[in-house]
Amino acid sequence: VISGTGAAFSSARSAGAVTATTTGKPVTPNGSSFYNVVFNGTGGNWAFSGGTASTSNDFTITTGTVTMPTGTTTIGGSFQNTGGTFMHNNGTLYFTSTATGKSLRANGSSFYNLAFSGSGGAWSFVDTNATSSNNVLITQGTLTAPSGTFAVGSSFENSGTYTHNSGTLRLYASATGKILRTGGSALRNLLVQGSGGGWTWSDASASTTNALSILTGTLTLPSGTLDIGGS
Image (cartoon, rainbow, N blue to C red):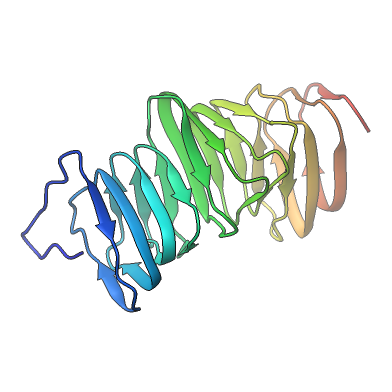
């Protein structure tokens, strides 16, 4: 998929299916936006050559390997990796839907940055466990966490709504200066496990409905009240 300099494509409301079964395939949207994009080629390997990309609805990987842009990929619907692999390439997935019922499925691949900013939008993890190796930012909307462990390698900042789904938020950075902001949403379990890592809980008050565990690293607690429902 290549859109040359000065060229553009219009996705209308169609699904763009990318079906190669060989490696070394570039994806160069050149500022144009997909509506739905589906990568579905056994043995296929695609790499976004630009710094950014966007799909106004769903982004799906059925088979094959997709290397994401180094910058921001804007997704207006769901992100589903059902049987392939994606390489985050130190980029950001930015979710902008203003509707409910959207989903995220990493299927064993790791995110880098995750950002959610859609007034009225709601996203749910399909995976039992998921990892974002850098930052998670919820500005608007509701994110329902995995039911197992959600591992975050840097800061976790929520100013929307975070639904813990009876799961564990695990913070594992190895550097200081990280932020934990729950923004009025309760956690279920919080596990701090990052040798050399340091987090500051920026809320005045916060709560976990079950356990708070600090195995390695440093957590600076809220300045007001921290309610812990377990141990």
